[in-house]
Image 1 (tube, rainbow, N blue to C red):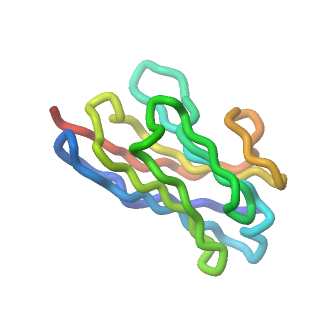
Image 2 (spheres, one colour):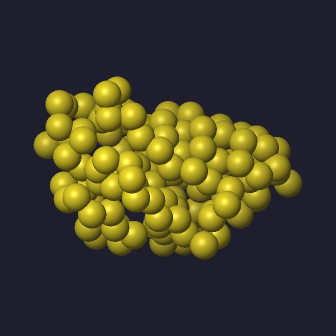
Length: 124
């Protein structure tokens, strides 16, 4: 069992940056591959980025590739999402998720644990 708490959301102008954090409870954080997903109003939840347990492998949605960076600090049970060059279409609630597997996944149904989400709004 793991509990996830996101933070770092807010309102920024287009072209700006935000860094989201997700802190996990428990002592087995390094056993979980982690992902970030987002859901905009009226849309389905979509994959943003994922990282393997040790952090050596990452994956990104095409829409954020080159602008967003996922990373993790296993010593502090935290996964990050650095978001640069943000666009209005990045506006959404962002969720972090944990998957008890060595492999990362881009599919939300492969993640068993979810945070409550943090709102990101990008003004044009």
